[in-house]
Image (cartoon, rainbow, N blue to C red):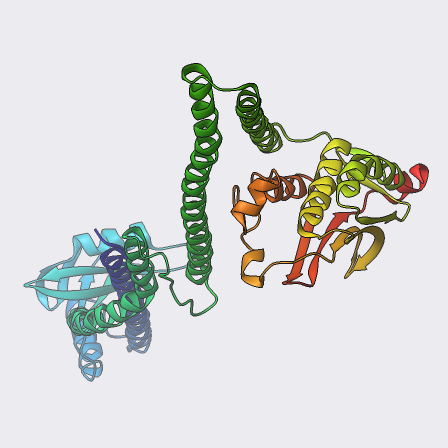
Length: 483
């Protein structure tokens, strides 16, 4: 059963049960109230007739005997005086034999009086049903000069039962109308209540078919709205993850193709020159030249394998974070790049302000060394490479920035976003000529990510490039202790 029908059935059940119980209690309470009033009225009437009868007995002249004939006459007089009411009046002797009217017996009624009368009370009442009609009887005991008589008042209370039955019929009609209205209201409410759930279900089915941009529009501030917002958040993350997976798959495919190509070129040269050495007769100079080609291409494969191993190590093994003195990094960096900058007679400037960051010393040197290596390849003879470091406050954070800047040939802005892709080279022939494999910036990106750092790259053709790397500050006390 769907949520709509469950909610509709539940609301109808609650409404019908509530109105049924309420109506039953109301009608029954009204019936009991009327019945109680009739009882009090009957008892009051029998007491009044009792008083009138006893007063009449006491007012009889002394020469009148209290015999059955006079009692009958008095009972008839009392009954005639009560004729304005709807009650039937009877008088019985102590044995329950009818005196007025004659021929009746009231033994049961007399027993009822003796059984139900309380201390100080000489009246009793009961309900009975005769000929499909409901009656109420009230009886009073009278002590007349040592003789016991019973006065009975009987009246019909059928109108109370008829009123109750009429009330039930009317209420059933009203309940039918109320049920129809409640069904209509419940259906409208259930449709409105389940509409957001249906929209959410439709969006989920659409999303499952591959339309990852599908979203639902939240409305209101209830739990379903929160569920819609959670769905949109989940869909946003899934869409981003799917796009990221597709992008990773694309990059992986390009990486595999580029790696195969990078392996193919040196291997082709190595195999070709080796085959020449084995099959052809050549002079010493030609043999030395062929061996040199094999050596250079072998060294290129060695560098490529080292770069690949470095990428794998950073991605799989992680790093051991240690406090690093920037002045120590500056000294080691100067020694590391000395030979490289001397080759092209480059002007190298290195100035790192004192400070402590958390990281791996070897990876950090590899990071800055790769950047300096790229700058040296981009610079012409006598170019300038400048490495500086300083503390900067960016927003509420304090970060240490290392900047590597050169005045080389730069690169187009549309190439900046792709230089961190493995094997991506702007000028492949020039890069291979200078010993590049297209992995340096990819390694830099992995090292920065492993250090929880960030970087910004800006470059313009023929104006140079600048790379800013921002490292998060370590604990201030640790920093002061190492400075």
